[in-house]
Length: 506
Image 1: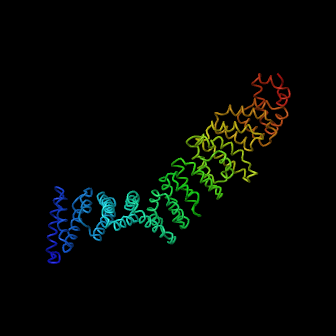
Image 2: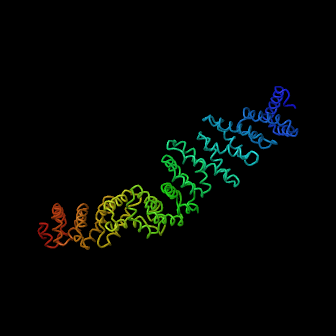
Image 3: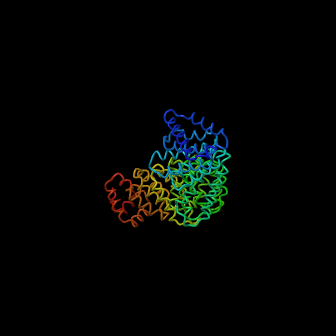
């Protein structure tokens, strides 16, 4: 037996052979010579299997030391030799990948790690006898402490291996086991460790959307640290999943109890990245009605039919300001007219906020004021045009909405270019006998005085002009000065009005 004889002599022979092959590979790519040698040794049978294995291992290590990582020789060698010794080859690849990954910042080391992962991929597909071992090594790399290696391995597994039907079961089982290890761990686990266990499963969810239900179930059972990491990662995950996926609708229709926050983050992310289909919007509406959780209104608010959006407004106004603002921005940033003809426009929303019956719905007036203030803050949405359309609609209501004059004054402040429009509006309010509504009357006088709408004030019946002056004594002097300067106007005023102002009749 050649190999069992003089071992040191055999090693020297093999070293010489390997050196010769490597030299040929460097000069003229001696792959054919290499294959001829391995097939010849393999044909000698079992007694020479030790020689075959030793020669192969020496050669792959030599390739690693002498050839650049972009050279395909190593991968080609492993794919085309008659047989590979599983334990030794998998150990070599593990060392190649992990040791190279540990040398962060060295470009060549990163290339070797990449080559190792690509070789694992090819062996999974082309070497059935090594498939499980190479798959297991790929999966262990997908949970490695080195973030760079882990990201490369996850991409390999999720993008290339997982789509293959006969590999899916083992890959899912591994990822689920990694997740379950977290749910049984204590709260002392670091965020980095949590990410290491979760990232592969998140990547699989983007390929197989049915896994979302399992993800939400895990969230419901997770610790606070684990939930924090899942919350941080789920938004980027959701952007990779089309909202039209039937699996998304299924999980919305029946989410695991305790998973609401993660589901909300998913829906928010989808709403930011793409148009939500009607089927998903209906499913989220049904979930809102089922749970009464008004947070689910936010991601779909801009997609809801007008009647449905108006129906939920009392709940909408009770949401935190950040949630309300998110809903409005998502709904109207692209177009104040709304996301579709069937949905609310910005002006319709503004009007409807004024028409909410706070007593009926037991909403503090302060909440409604907060909502209208928010609208004025969103100047790119609630433009002068939107505000003028809204106020034009509001003035038609009898009685006037409680916040009407407050809004008119805010509109005058926010859009000075609308002064002429607002002065005309004030004249309409005189025709509506604004003095009969005391809260609105006070706002009317403040607005008219601020804008210098003296001709409008002079249209007031004498008793109400007198009452206005009693409320705001400064008005008398301002009106007096205006009349003195405008003889034409003064000549048309009733004698009683001039008497109230202390002006002689012209």
